[in-house]
Length: 363
Image (cartoon, rainbow, N blue to C red):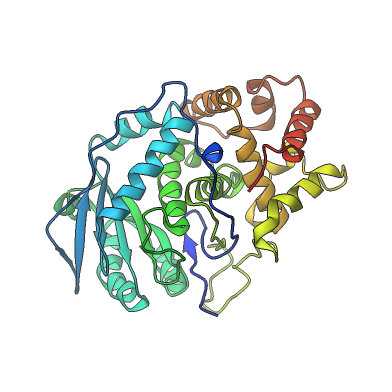
């Protein structure tokens, strides 16, 4: 068996649930503002020399893509399609992100072999130091580099100016990913969604130390939701930075999937039918790396599915999320209950569990 790719974006990635392609009814619905104007298709640029590697390039409305080993245009297309879907789901997403980027393009670096990943490391690590990463962060990244297949990257101002892009972006190694040549390959979709979601959540994630670990339902839960709904499958493990000081330490790789990855929604439905195993929303909001299990991660995705199940619920949720982002502070159970229009936690739990048991919740 080929090694499964791993990502360390928000602590995520690689070969896990196999979910059939989605029907038209499962595709993201237009948000309250309707369909945005489609951006022009990505255009190929001149080859770029980064260290010892020469990358094909492509530029789209919001992405600067550098690819070694394949065409760059499909990667840019994926970024734009994920962005478009997130703008439909969250009416506040597009204006907020565009204002923050201020016309700068998000860099996406993609390779298709472990050898090229190691060559990219030689170019990237000195840049990471220039970008302000401390010795501990560098050591941690060095320990993980051979195990990951995707991570968020930081560039220093000089490199970003030279490449004509934003100082934060993402890196992917598609060597072991399924459907790696498809624009909307699940692995690629997951990382694009993680990058964009983290941009939007940035004030919240910076509002409290350890916030990323406290918000797995909103970070990893959302990127699993996007990966499945847009890519048609999930291929993801989660890699815990904090418990991986030793490169040989396997405890950092958490068990994320059911043995039968094709029928996991049925498993969640069974759990939701029994009061003893139905996970309350308050518990979902408390999921963290220390206690993460396949059931918990499945409930986190399922809750995101519920939050996007109707335009009304989605609008209420994203209005609340935008409010806490502006403060900034972490979303919490009482605020979420009120925002969604429920009188108490029991009523919200019942609505969520009924959704899980209904035909609306499916693969």
